[in-house]
Image (cartoon, rainbow, N blue to C red; front, side):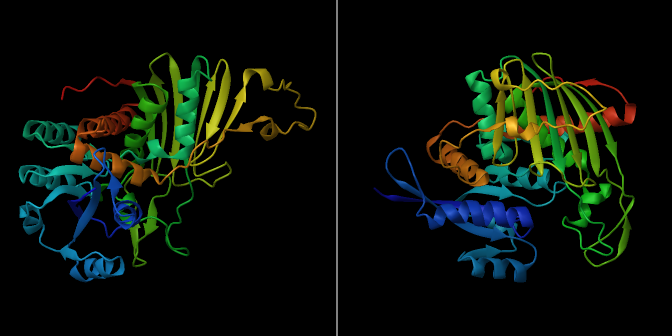
Length: 383
């Protein structure tokens, strides 16, 4: 057995998601485990260089987590032939330009989503990666959440029979920032800075629905800005110009209807911050991030509507938890391992920048639907 080094340029990992999920819990976790075992028996060990604009911040991050290399010079990092992967988790507005620069430098690219603010840009960068022959990928983290893996297992086993409908609820109350500090960055609520619930979440719902339930065929969406003013990280008031909630209905293949509510203006009274409920002729299931509960046709209760009497049935008691049956690793880490295998030994990989473009497409159609107050078909992309 020999050790293979793989150099990864990580850009934009001083932010919450990039730092915690991608740098610390994924790439550095793989490194600290001694790398990952390849088919030929070798161990592939990530060697990271952190790239950012604030030298003090990236130096502190590198020192804290035992990363020897960091730089503020992206061009120099891209010029190093020993580093073969470029990853970006910075702002959506910068992403297409950064990815193009990395692709032109011959790097394989892996990116957070959305891949761009507009569909034309997303298609262009996907085509560019294909033309240059570099391996490429888009983050699709929710597919490897234990709850959704269990839902997909139920679907693949035929548990649901014919799937009829899907209901999804995502979100929580994000404080305005005046008397209680907000849990999310202020740019999320400024359209001019790339914020917006539709652009943030419909790219997720595209790959979740496509892969866990059935491909999306059409969308009807209403985007809303419920809270028009918020306070930023410095306590300064600003106008919230981006949508903070999206109420969307999707038509899926197989005559399945999916309804997904996404809101940063809702208080949670459900099993998790996101839940997906699938109803079918033979059974139903509801999943959060980690747990999943099912109810088969044979043990479905028979309630009777009677508004004159207090409800005596506890509907939660009639559901059975779907067992883990395996150990589930961090979903971000699992996908990093998949992409690294794709680069190192040409292992199968489906979640290319083309899939990222599909997410941008759905968000763009969601905004158009909201503006026109209508249903819109979701056509196949020509990439």
